[in-house]
Image (cartoon, rainbow, N blue to C red; front, side):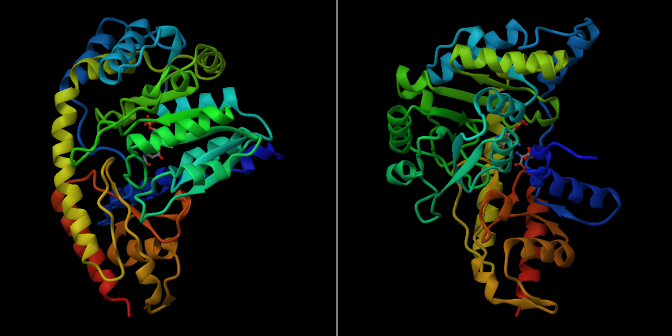
Length: 397
Ligand code: PMP
Ligand code: GLU
């Protein structure tokens, strides 16, 4: 069968497929330690589950308004006003089936053949493929580990061409865990204003911050910046609700309306039950998130400290999200029985077979000299997995 060319341009999400492989191996009884899955290991808060149960019991189980129920859109508007000082009318908010879906609607509404989108690298895997799926061209802006993966004004300016339509800002970022300070965001906003770019601000990890790091939404830098920014967020990470599939976008009305029209012709509304659950999460989930972040912080320190003691490995302390992104270039001088290790993908394969530890290699994030390890798993599991990883690395000669 001859498929559409766009289907051939993309691969399955590597983060999802590697995590699925690890889970399938565990289900077969294989003792795998999973550092691949990018989702909180915590259970969804009870108050959120209760709201979902109440929705089911009261028959709130039909189609809703395609763009989301007003109650949830008001809760989102309230959150953005109280926490960020951003004012949106509910007509400027679209609720979708996860932030990934919000981003996808946005790419469909905004992009066409010839358009370029600047993506700071390392980047979360789906940004590139969603741009490709919509016939546009991803332009990678390589950032340096030594500079904490910050986007420099000159580096960004050098990526802009007459075809640049948009750029992605993801702070705190997946996979690096880096957060942008205000000065970095001001530099990005300046370039966006001068070149008439749309800013896609993926703020899904905004509440998962450490060491006093602060989240700034780039949309807060002024009305002219807000007018060209789409803030994307959701409940997956902050409230351990990855399976409920609720994300949202807030931005300029014409763009949000176009996204809502696309949604109404594709998925219709996100689950009615999950929408009610998301209202409860946004209105009462703050204490849960704080407890979870305290625990993530303990795990983060343990993981980064241990990684830095391994031969050939060095790891920055991330200031947000729940991933360590160790540099493993020092391992490339070493070999195992079957030959040398020359890439992150080879090291990840070696760790899976030798140590039975699942990690995501850096290549799909735009780096062949890093691995991504999620520390959203129990601290004893982390300690055991790192013991195994260290032993496997010490076997290399
Ligand atoms: N953005 C980033 C950076 C992510 O890591 C994720 C998690 N996969 C998402 C967006 C999408 O999250 P969800 O669709 O679960 O809301
Ligand atoms: N955010 C997670 C990750 O990066 C979930 C998987 C995905 O959607 O990519 O692993």
